[in-house]
Image (cartoon, rainbow, N blue to C red):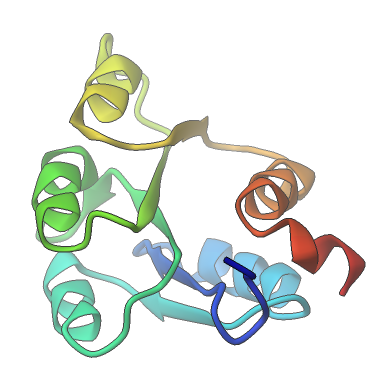
Length: 128
């Protein structure tokens, strides 16, 4: 199946406005990006739009990303979830991957890491 700019999209769920602005600025050059700051608002968004990738923070105002991974994937099994967090709790990465995240990114991270991950899911964007 061909993935293109209209199909490959990203939902960022993070309450850090600065990080969201940076990621949006970087990613929107290649694909559609939408930002939500809470799990609840993301849930509402997901009832109407199905992104290919979710960049999910762990510590959100209304819960933790890691405990939401399984619930999101039960409803939307094709979405690729990346847990990104500054939380260094022991076992968090393993739990995220066990719950179904396709990757775990420790904050702070390089923008090139996100780009490389996006391109691995949507390789056609590399030439865009």
